[in-house]
Amino acid sequence: MKYLVFGTGGVGGSIAAFLHLSGCDVDCIARGEALNAINERGLMAQ
Image 1 (tube, rainbow, N blue to C red):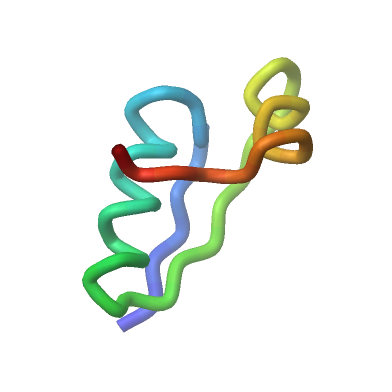
Image 2 (cartoon, rainbow, N blue to C red):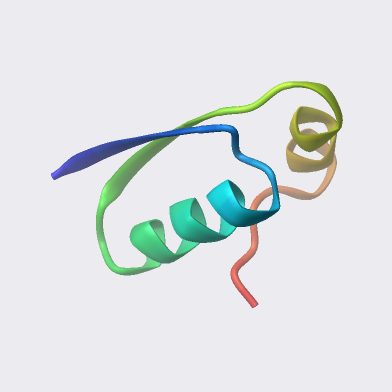
């Protein structure tokens, strides 16, 4: 199943990361500070 996460900040980023770790196909839409952080460090589930 494919998922699209709008607003990949703290909550959306966590949801996207855990969906990906469970084997789902995930695309994310982010902007502003969240986009900058993703570009610099990527998404990480901790």
